[in-house]
Image (tube, rainbow, N blue to C red):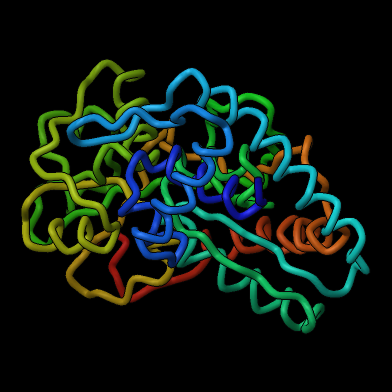
Length: 308
């Protein structure tokens, strides 16, 4: 039984597909199938039950999955600990799509200046996928938005970020001196799809104030939400860090009256995995830059109007 076999097995179990696992591992489907077949031959029984559109772990497969995760975790942590010099090494960083394009570049620039021999690999994925990667040891550090449902992770709040109301030109609320939560009740919303936690933040905020936002369209990209608002498809709530880099003259951003909608940006990692010194230094860099970034995003003026 080889380490590569266990790694391939875990990826197929995660993706429930030889095709998708092979694409992620950069391994041909035939090579992946041969590796799993050899593993099953060594074990003496199948680890997957082949169904019409997916793969399901057998009892033996479920038992192997637990042991394989433990074995790979031990191997990877041992190698990381042996080679850990605090100046070089590989760090796998995850960030959700509503944070990655805005906060992460500032952190990466500063970290590269301080530790030029370190290698940072970035994963931009939704919260659920990043939590799974953290749990499995595929991501060392993740930048997420609270709340974090996954147990057994260390979660450290970094700063609170306001969500701003974004309106198209000509919208009736643009000329209001103050916009309240009651004012936006009844207007159609453009939101990210359900896999993005920002939509949960928005819906939760509205529900706690006794109204359900009516979503007319959902998309997978924050930039698309902004453009659909510009075209008059609806209104939305956008993180302030996204507003800070928006150069459009056709979108109007407003702060809602108290209580303002907000989200908490957090740093998360798996405390049960070996934490290298270079990973700790990356976390220190995030702790230093993120709060200042939050303040600068609050004060940054953009060409997008903040109301008339």
